[in-house]
Image (tube, rainbow, N blue to C red; front, top):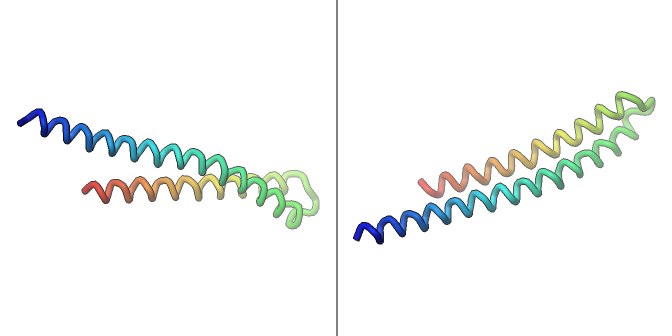
Length: 88
């Protein structure tokens, strides 16, 4: 009887581990894509907003990359929190 309980708890633990693994994998992909997109959008914005070039363009481009990175991480974090809430 205890064997069936331990096997069911290990299978639920395994499915939870798989769900976390999948969310983290998807999150890593999102981070790469959204950070790249942020750099592109920031770079285009820098061409319009920073006419002089130089440091201002680098700042705008970096800001765009940071926004993309932050957005992707926030989305991944929210998905992990939703998973934890479902398990409770």
